[in-house]
Amino acid sequence: MKRPIISPSVLDADFLHFENEVQKIKDAGLEWIHFDVMDGTFVNNISFGNLFLKSVCPKIDLFKDVHVMIANPLEMVEKFKEAGADCLTFHYEACQNDQEIFDVIDKIHDFNMKAGIAIRPSVSIEEIYPFLSKVDLVLVMSVEPGYGGQHFVESSLDRIAKVKNEIVSNGYNVLVSVDGGINDTIAPKCLNNGADVLVVGQYLFNHSDFKDRVERLLK
Ligand code: DX5
Ligand code: ZN
Image 1 (spheres, rainbow, N blue to C red):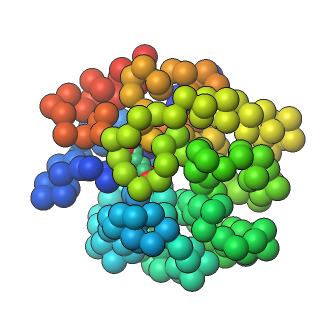
Image 2: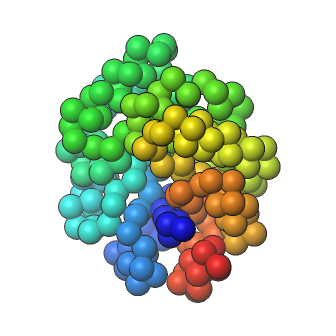
């Protein structure tokens, strides 16, 4: 069985000592880092943007898993390429129609990034099925986007299993990523339902035992 990917969300990391936070990720043997970009419009919170990523990404030799919770993904694709994103995941709900979704996916690929589509818990998982043949990753949000440290929405487990089944039965090559409220109890449930990537924020950061926590997620 493939080793699950842990993608630490730095939303609640210690930004005064960001280099140390990145080192913790590397010392734990992880290869991904998750950046939650929030614009204050698509979600009622503002985190950091493409200019912050542009300042740090070139110095981080990890896979830059960028999750944009922004209202205008199509207009920002090039800016996140310039910022150093390796995978750019936008929200289904941020687009006006299917054509715009296909346009965003194509533009992300045109800029040689992996394309991810995210869907919030309140939206039927079947809504993203038409795009599975085009994307590289599906981000099943297990909390409403906008904040770290929320409780995992239990119905997400069924959504993970459903979208994984749709991917496998059609032979698509798409990673299933889960994002929000994940800890050592919930992680195995997500993996058993088909998750390939676990985005984990507050369970990992602001504790003294980062590496031990990573091992507990993967036990
Ligand atoms: C929420 C973000 C998540 C969140 C994960 O909008 O997409 O990445 O920060 O953090 P935890 O694990 O703290 O829920
Ligand atoms: Zn995220």
